[in-house]
Image (cartoon, rainbow, N blue to C red; front, side, top):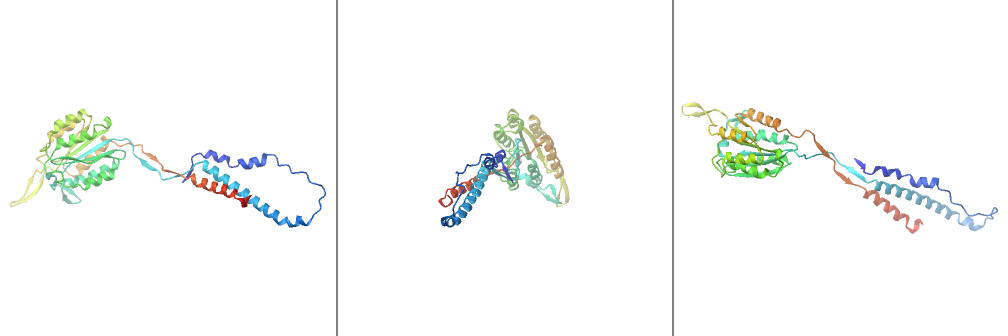
Length: 325
């Protein structure tokens, strides 16, 4: 829509007409009471009509130029559609385990057995999309920890890069301590009241330079709250030569360490044995770390004053043309 930034200037539109109406009329020169027509008067009759038409046209053009000039002074703008503005919410980092054990197919998605990473992607993507107003980052870790996405308001890109991640991309082992240390490094300069790390793993720390508990101390010192999530079912059926038997595919999860890491930083430890558990955990995280409720919007503005200004200048040039004098 078109909006006038200084709309009060539109009150100047009738100013020339008020001056013309209120100012005293120009006095004509005294003329003789008796006038004798000559042939020259009849010869100039057509010229007088042309001059009158020209004067009328000049008056219309001058009025139009004045209107355009006032419109330009009122600063017309084109207002675009309202766009949601990024707010200062939390700085939330996700750390996802890509070690070899994540390929265990002990989750059911749409009646099919899927690996643990696929289950995480199906739930975490929706969680990321809900974090309106938060800056979200992504750390992928295996034998090493890598920053896949720095903190950004572009939640779509974070979700896309998580979906493109693959098991073994960062190595086959599990460097939980290094993942926490990397998160501390990336978040230490941000607001103290908004630093959150959500760490998802299915094993114990088997690689890296820093132990998880030492990294947790560093996180607590830098006011980084950590929520740890242990991934994996408690039992599953495995076929063998003598039939099926029950096994615990999550026997390697170091729950004691994950609990200490979370509690030492003011966070919580959660256990996701199936897809419903994982979804409920993310819902719980939404309650513990809620997004901003009040959304802010802005409307892009495009200046249009040059359009009526160009028209006024064109008409002014036309009026100064010799043929219109």
